Length: 340
Image 1 (tube, rainbow, N blue to C red):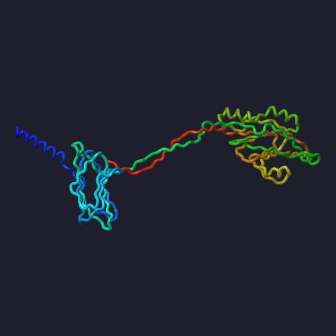
Image 2: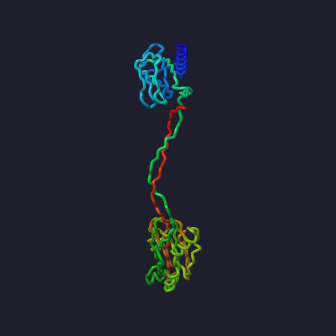
Image 3: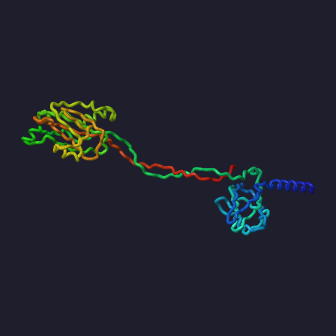
């Protein structure tokens, strides 16, 4: 019975000794320059025990030595240390640990450092103590309110509808009074994308008045938008109104208005100008933010003329709404990790 007990205790002793065999982690010499630190990083498993041996080769003091969890609390510290022999510390949780050697003197320190690990169990024997570094993306989000176009459509808006002007001839205006030049002011609506004008000329006043029932520029444009699904039509698709006598129409700015009316030298936009016409449908894509004028001139020196003028604009109407949008803010940073 006594022999059996001795054998059992011997087996237990051998077993305990085997599980507590230490595994070298690092054995190195290094120099800590004056007024600086030297840091080592290693990873350990929960329950491991680490054994520390340290000495300064010339017996000089190291101001501080600290062991701490990485970005965590200090586990052990020593001051004015010259050597440390078989200092054993138990690891409370798996993670990365920092060994910091601080030299605050005006001379360097030559250090010898040996670190061993006793695994807590056979399962952690192969635990990798090497600390690795990687770059990771840290993404945060900012909530912003932005506006967006929920819906949009083209709408025709009347600017002038069948305005009737009598424009005298040059000689009659000189002898009997009246005007051989007149002007129609207009402002284009906001968000205009295209605009049009229709003009017809007759000597007979009653004929021009009757034409008001036949010319519907705004409604005709609306029908073309509906049938084409947008602006996919040409001005020639508008019905050409009848005319009988000639007139001139000039597109001018406010600065040229009085020059035009007073028969002085003036400037005009060729794209919006028509000369010697009896009738016309005119399409323009140039959009003006200022007040503009359609100047009407009677080219005849003998006969007056009645002119009917309509102006309409195609406007892009948008339904605007607000929504909250998450905008990512990506910051890249280095991260330490253990490959276990």
